Length: 218
View 1 (cartoon, one colour):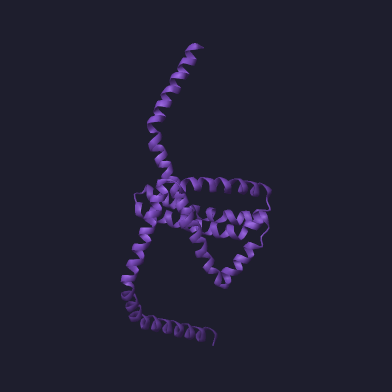
View 2 (view 1 turned 45 degrees about the vertical axis):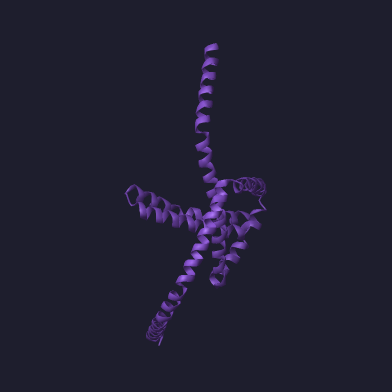
C-alpha cells in the first residue's frame, strides 16, 4: 500500500513538473485557438448570415425562408441540422483528395464546404430560433451556452492575442481600402470597355431564347 501511494505521489510530481514546463506553450496555443473562434464568430457566422439574407429579395428563396420560419419545433431542428449533414460528403471527398496528395484541392473543397455549411446554419438558425426555443431542452442548453460563451469571449477579447488580431484586422482593412481606391479608376474604365460586349451577349442570348421558344411552341 505504501509503495502504491509513493508511486502515485511520484507520478503526480512528474505530471506537475511536466505541466509547469508545457503550461505556457499550451495556454498560448489555446489562446490563439480561442481567438480564432471569436474571429470566426465575427467574420464568419454573422457576415455569412447577412450575405444569405440578401438572397431573400428573390421570390423562390424568400418563399423557402418563409416555409422554414413556419416549421414546428422538431422539423425546424431537422432543417437546422440539415446543412451540415448534406455537406458532410464533400468533407469526406476533401479527405480523399488529401490522402491522394492533392493538398490544394482538398483544402479548397474543405474550406468551401465549411463556409457554405456555416452560412446556411447561421441563416437557418435565425429563421428557426423561435421554434427551437419552444423545445425545453434546447432552451435550457441555449440559456446555459450563451452566458458561458459571452464570458469566454470577454476573456478572449481582453487577451493580447485578440488585441493584436484586431490591430491586424484594422490594418488589413485600411490597406484593402487604399488598394481599392488606387485601382478604382482602372476597374471603372475596364467595366466601361466591357459593358458593350456584355450587352451584346445579353441581346444575343435573349434572341436565341426567343427563337427557341418560337420553334418549340410556335
